Length: 153
Image 1 (cartoon, one colour):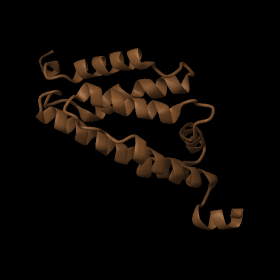
Image 2 (tube, rainbow, N blue to C red):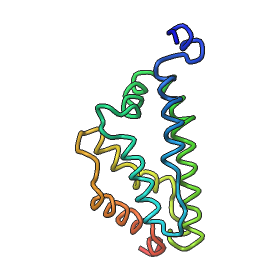
Image 3 (cartoon, rainbow, N blue to C red):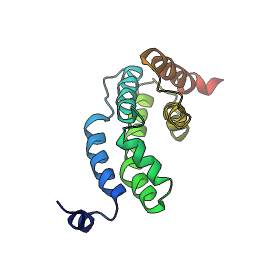
């Protein structure tokens, strides 16, 4: 396929990568609901880590980096990839609220930052992704902050 054909369908190289990443992310980074929120978050975060590593060869990391310099790509990334997954996360967390695993008044926007912020912090500063033990601890701390007793603190 020629560049001319590619750019007829996609406005930029970043858009081509976004389409590919969106397809892969949809297949591997869904939000399971087994009834065990900690296990489900661990599973989902492990899938995200797999998409981000190794950072020097991850198309997702390349896409994020390119979006920092391209406002149109950044908007497309937010609308097509990030916001739908945030909505899925919040839906999973609402189910956890209904089952009493998360406080009914927990701020789900803050929950996104609590759960995912550490991964992107580690990515940006080349600190390495958490291993399975660290990830389990991260999930436990986030859930402790969001837990049913958090509103009484």
